[in-house]
Image (cartoon, rainbow, N blue to C red):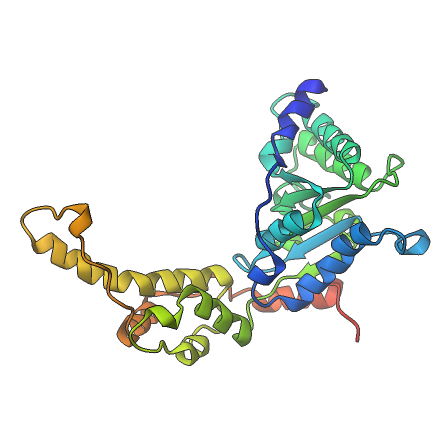
Length: 302
């Protein structure tokens, strides 16, 4: 057990990830629900007793690249809890019986270091649906059962241990796990205001000769995720560098580093070229996420 505990201790985030709530653009509903579920019970434990005991399981779901892991990093930064960053490789072992023991030791460590947060990234890889007709290995089934028992079994205690899970495929999760993940928060594609804020941060106009067409960018990026927008900005910023590299390649001799010219500003044409060369990666399943959110998701009731 000591050896297993030492291997899991490597997954504890020691330093702060340094991600503030303000650095995440948009996602107002997701941030509000996450603060209500995790931050408030730690700050004001007096109010969260009896019926109002904190939610122990929170699921972040939505298209890839919308900021689910960023939200988890913000929780790790703001809450000052012991943060366990767990993936499938952390809890799956080739030795018979070790996977279940790793899950048990993980929750014992979390209770020992309480208040703590266990972040299970891509949880669908660990606990997909069980049932007849599924080619499921016995070891996988035992691991899933142990995780379900540890989250809500007779061993459940009063220590503050939050399970924060993230997935791009919420409909693949087992029904028993969905029941234990009491708060289910949609992390949607960014709204126009959020997209504009991301563009203004990544491509600030004060470093450019001409004002960048933010309105054009916002209009043409419907269905883009946050990571798609970052890729678009990177593509736009590469255009002046490509022009400079072409000039440098024409020279016969290598230019010394201290004599290298500065990269030119981004132009309107660079923006249009980047828009042509970048496509959204996560918009096809947007309706399916909205339907899952309507069926199972947590909402803010006014």
